[in-house]
Image (cartoon, rainbow, N blue to C red):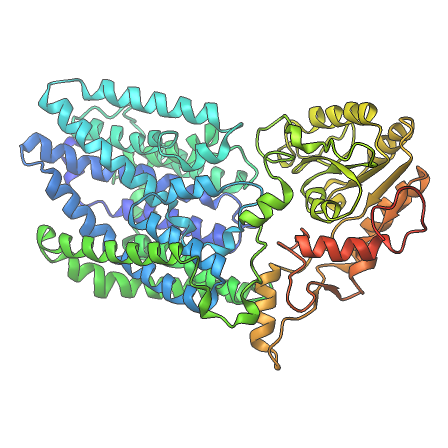
Length: 636
C-alpha cells in the first residue's frame, strides 16, 4: 500500500463492513449459533477510525479543515437514516408498548438524538433492567461511542498540527490509556467497560493510527506477504465470532481479536488476494454500502416482532425479518441517503439538525408524560405498575438497603426491626425472590422482620455455582454474615427462598442441617415462583386485545410444568429430610398448563419469575394456609 492509496476508493473496506454487519445481524437473530457476532461492532469501530481520520488528516495537511464543515458532513451522513428509524420506532411504540415501555422509548429517543445512548443504557444496566428485547433502540449505543469520539478527536488532531505537537505520541497515549482502562474495568464493572466511551476509544484509535501510518508511509510491520497478513486478520475476526459469547469477559483482552484482525486486513492493502477476490466481491460491497442503514433497521424490526409475539420467533420469522431489514436498508440508501448526499452539506445540515431535535423533543415529552398512559383503556392502566425497574418495587423490596444487588456488602440498620420488642422475629433470607415476599410479611400483624437479601445469591452456605459470573461475588461473605446474625438474633421463624431451579440447590441440605443446630423454632423453605412464558404485562396486554370479551386474564401459560415440578419436588425432599417445612408456590398458583397471574385488576408478577406485592400477599396467604399449624402465626 502506497501513502497515496488512502485517497482511493477501496471496495474491500465496504466488503469488510458487510462482514461486520452480517455478524451483528447473525448474533441478534440467532444468538445461540452466531455466538460472538457482536464483535462486528468492534470491526466497525476500527474501520470508522481509519476512514474518518484519513479525511481529517488530509484536510489538516492541506489547510482546509473546518470543524463546521466536518460536522456538517457527519450530519449529512448520519442523521437521515437515524431520523427515519426514530420516527418509525416512535410510531410503532405508540401502538405496541405499555406506558412504562413507551416512557423508556421516549428516554432512548432523547439519548439517541443527543448521541448519548451508550451512557443511558449503561445507567440502566443491572439485574432488574428490562430485557433487551423491549428496547428497539438498544443498538444505538455504538453510534453514541463513535460520535463522542469524533467530538474529541478532530480537535486533538487540529490542535497537534496548530501547536506543532507530536500526534503519534498523543495517539499512543490515548490508545494505551483507554485499553488499560478497559482491561481494569472489564471484570468488576463490565457494563461500564462495554458502554462508556473512554474504555472503548482505543478501538477507534487503532483505525486512526493506521490512517496516520498509511498517510505518512509508516505502516507498522509492513508485510512482504500481504496475503498471509490478510488471512491472519480474517482468521482473528472469525475466531472472535466463533469463540466468544455473551458470558465472555468482553471487551477486555478478547477485543484484540476483531480489532487487530481488522487492522491487519486493512493494512494488507487492496492487492491481497482475500481483499481483491473475496471482500471486493460485488455482493459484499453492495451490502457494505448499505451497512449503516441495515444496522439501524434490523434491531427495531426484530424487537417489535418479539413484542408482538407471545412465543419465541421462529427461524423463518427471523430470516424474514433480516430480509426485510435488507430491503428497508436499500430503500433508505437509494431514495434518502444518496439524494441527500448530493446536496451541499452546509445547506442540508441545519435542516437535519432541526429534524433530529424535533424528534428528540417528542421523546422528551413522552418520557415526561410517563409514556402517555391514556392511550389504553382504564382497565389496563395499572398493569405495568409493578415493573422491576419501577419506584414502587424499589421501595417495596427496599432495594440497595435490605435487598442488595450491586457491589454493596452491608445491610442497612433498618433491615432489622427493633419494635415492637416483644413481637416474634421473622428472618427473610434469600435472593431477589425472597425480597419479593417482604411486602407480604410487612402486612402481617404483630411481628418484627429481619430482611437479608442479595440478588443472584441463594441462602446456601458454601454455595458454588458452575459459572461464577452468574452469581454475586460477595455471595459467600454475605451468607456467612447472615448465619452470624441468625445466631445473634434467635428468630422465631426463618423463611428461606430463592430461584432454586437456577442455582441447583445441592448445598441446601447441609445449610438446613447447620441451621437446625442454631435452635430456630421454625424454618420454612419456600419453593420457586413458577416461571411464565414471557413478560406477564405484555402477555396480559396481548390476551386483552386478542380475546373477546376484553378483560384482564386471571391465568397465563406456564413455561415448563414438568421442569418446575421436578425442581419443586427436589427442594421439598431436601426440606423433609432436614425436618423443616416446605411451601410450594407451584401448588398454590398453577395447574399443569397455567398459573394465576391476577385477580382481575392487580398483576401478580413483576416479570416472568418475580411476584409483585399484590401477588406475594395473595399467593403466600394461600400457600401458608395449606401448612399444618405450628409455631408463631405469620399468616392466617
